[in-house]
Length: 225
Picture 1: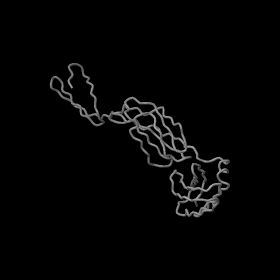
Picture 2: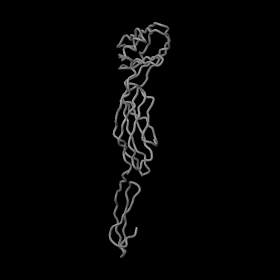
Picture 3: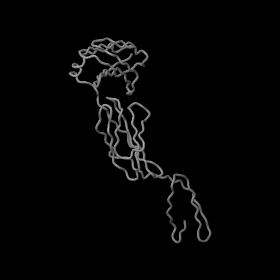
Picture 4: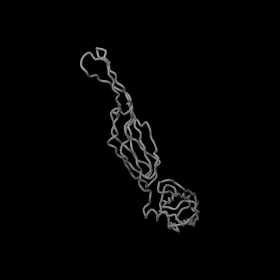
């Protein structure tokens, strides 16, 4: 860089590193100085983040467009988990998440992907909760004359007593507190039935038992000792 007059020159470093600046005067004298330069991103963190259209299995997240952002990255996870699910290179400012567990709290955050040397920082972690798939008591009475789960708490054997109007396939699932499915069974029932299942292999704790028949779902809290 040449300076015809004055003692100031503007430089535009392109990466964060340590630079050595050497200056030579018109009389041949030289001087040098080492300086550490940190490049800060001009890529803005996504703002105006909202979540809407929440159901038992999906949610829609929107945010405001950021200058310099080319795409965006969304990370989400069930509360209590340490690893994130990534949705990379989102071209717009709206994304729908599907395949979620009902009655579960999720964390999420966003980042702008830019052409500048660095992407933006992540936005602050926010949360939303999916809706419950529980039936009302009237709906349960229409579908099941009785639906008893015992013993509860249980140390290993789970008894399920059901009675309903029409024969059908009953899908039984157990979820842990992180929303992970840890057990699944299918049972055909003609009318009434008492079914016994061994869940002694599961760790002690609180679980959610989901009973699904066709498009209907009921849910029960189960304690494993």
